Amino acid sequence: MASGKSSLAKYIGNLIGLKYIDLDDFIVNKHGMSISDMFNFKGEIEFRKIEHTSLKELLNSKEKFIISLGGGTPCYSNNMKLIVENSKKVFFINTPNNILAKRLFYEKKKRPLVSSIDSIKDMLEYVSKHLFERFPFYNQAHYKINVNEKSVSEISKEIIEKINL
Image 1 (spheres, rainbow, N blue to C red):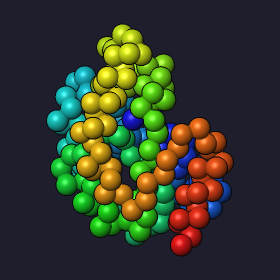
Image 2 (image 1 turned 60 degrees about the vertical axis):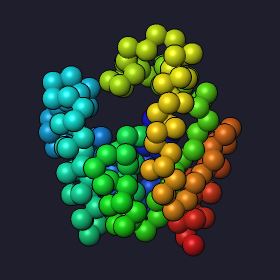
Image 3 (image 1 turned 90 degrees about the horizontal axis):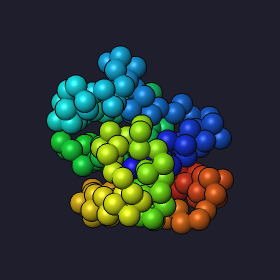
Image 4 (image 1 turned 45 degrees about the horizontal axis):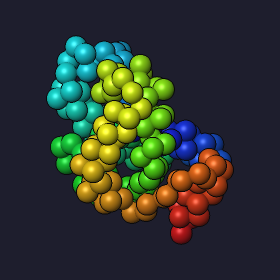
């Protein structure tokens, strides 16, 4: 949910020489339809089924890679259990609600679940509600990285140190 997961994963993958996969991009390439279109034409429930199947496919791969997930991915089916059991290191990128709300508000055209929210205040309410519901899943990650005002470089360094443990 606009925490910077994809940017960080791509940046770290380049730094340490691991392939990077964005789950949403994987789904789009496999199904030939944007995430927004999947939500609009198939609905969220069908999208979550596709997402779960795609996640299992990637986790069952023998290839080593860094994967970034959508903010809702860990919260559906038994996805978080699968992620934790099939991954060596799982990171929760903890970004303050006010930063998430601003990012989402200015990117809302690309995000079907928030496209109709009309103000940053309403976006902050949406973010706060959803994070409250999602924290039990996110907190199952092996590591929690607090972002605050850190640069991509600082956050990446912290994650790489934990990867190398």
